Length: 629
Image 1 (spheres, helix red, strand yellow):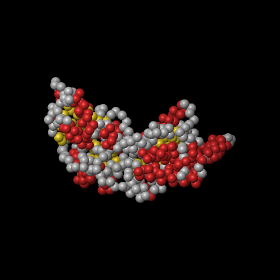
Image 2 (cartoon, one colour):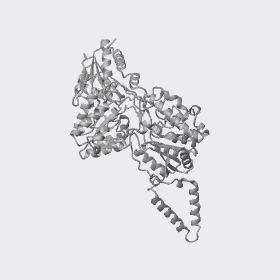
Image 3 (cartoon, rainbow, N blue to C red):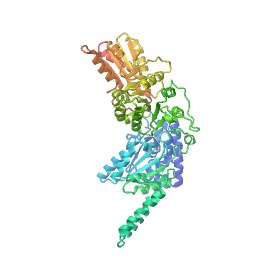
């Protein structure tokens, strides 16, 4: 196999046309097999980027030339060609190969870019540094897979055009992000304008016309006007060139000779230039090509021969599925409810809503800031917007949450999926900041369901709040398998009664760890009271008063410890105590650190946030306080 003989990008340049076609086929087969065996992985986007990646590494001298990737889930071919094929047997596993570019893995990875629409800002910064240091290395920024819908991409384009600095921008246009997106880019601009021979001939003709006696300048201007008129007649307005960026394309992203030709010509351009490449997400793998919803964007446990998912019995009910059903029921009863997402209708549970209420569903693309500000506008005129995004992505729109929704007191409901430790996506996708962030917005009500049954109740409560925003956050992992009791309103729920020694206040899914810890502590002679906090803003006064009567208070959350819910409990208990001393509070949560990929339960155990870890930390605190031998 050709793949077996590849040690790095330099080896690509020795291959002939037929060998390159064979290599692309081998790479696709390798990716399908590797992802089918991984805990999860991105498939369609990587299958579509195979020829583009081969061409980039043949034309540019990487890693000396700088290759930047946006939306890092299109970089499996890049990893394969840069010497990491052997690592795919540990793809997205603890201690294994990251699913995104990773600076610790390879000198070929410049940025760890798993969130979209940022690469052009990086490129502007890198191009500036190269120019100021008189560095002649070439710079390539690959954007696409829907990420051009993000406003930050347009900011980058604007500044690159203004700078005039040299960068090749490859637009990998597959018409999709996570879900289908519309491309409004030109599809008929001729490659002739990129050809250096055309440019030279145009310059010679211009000089000849200028030198003509009496009419030279007029003739030159006439040539420019005629050329512009022909362009406007034959092709759509060149969007990129209005920003000061040259454009060529569209190029067939699966035609290697054409790709290489376009990239070589573009690399010689002295300024910013876009190479518009059309690719097919899922290329070469029929199950991915036929997947209308996600093009097998991210998958886990599937049969590589058929593409069918290997079905395993769920460990418990799904929070996302429960949200989907509850929102449908609410929307049936209230026509003011609208649902908004940022390019992720499937994974956030909104596809059934889209099918049933298409005119009340909005997918704004990878544009979380726009989604939130737009929701504020809808709420101002009486609609009840529900914004469903991943927890990690709400941080991109926090300014809009705070000032466009919160400041205006608008009843927008934020539904944050994948909250807390998410697992194999790694540090960029753990949803550990949302509790600290959302609870800082004045007037925000924040719900943390400990079970899908609680989520259903809480969505109804959130939709009933009319004087300010609300937020629900839930994990990616399944809910408790056994039926659980649910609370009501904004009240916490006492899940276990103790004797006053220890009060454990648990946030969301970590109620299970708190109850398990209480069982372990009981075996050590310590009786613990356990509270399901349910609503973490505002904190329940009855819960706080009860906790204040215990010898030790322990808070447990799968969010960042610093500035999180535990620290707010400390402040409230101190205020309640007034002149008397409040009980000591042990705050347990995620550390101030970037947390590596792995299985969620394994990560939580390593952080001391499972039942055994909570019990051990509580025991240690009791011993230190002289309350336990």
